[in-house]
Image 1 (cartoon, rainbow, N blue to C red):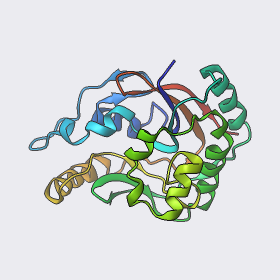
Image 2 (cartoon, one colour; image 1 turned 90 degrees about the horizontal axis):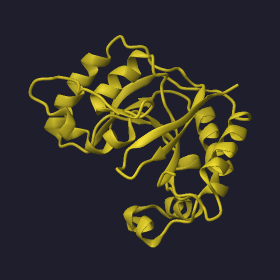
Image 3 (cartoon, rainbow, N blue to C red; image 1 turned 90 degrees about the vertical axis):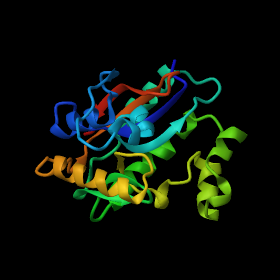
Image 4 (cartoon, helix red, strand yellow; image 1 turned 45 degrees about the vertical axis):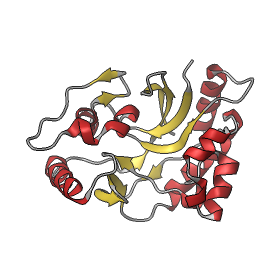
Length: 224
């Protein structure tokens, strides 16, 4: 049993992007193994990726949640498999490196309506497996900083950035100051130049969070 579960989009493990990102973040969630770090002069990559390291390279579809009372991992796996048989592949418009607030991530550029529909279906259909948030979990989301809509989503779906507030991104750093962000961005842009990017969400990955905080792949299901 894991402490929490989530549904992510993860790249095929044999892709150049997956291999690079595993070394950049130092964690391969598919194999459950620490990876040798990407080597670069003048920037401590491990220092600037402490939080995304635990998750591995991914795009969140349904944010981490505890299992509801009476539900087990086998129940969730069965529900996940049933869901994947109904979810339609969604295009992933051109991914590019961008600064989101204070962190760097790959984000799509273009029409994401079908992608948002996919994410909404996953969030809603699997919510029966999610335990209600505890008071501490709500507080960690800083509810006083959320819009009324986001607070409503937090209360209803356990996460504020869902449905029309969903924005797909694949995180590559922690929050950074401007000089460090500029340095990391230059390194990442160079490393990612010419690298093939995924063009569609054609698979979903069920993840589990171990007691050390790291996420592990339970199963990756290719969509029809």
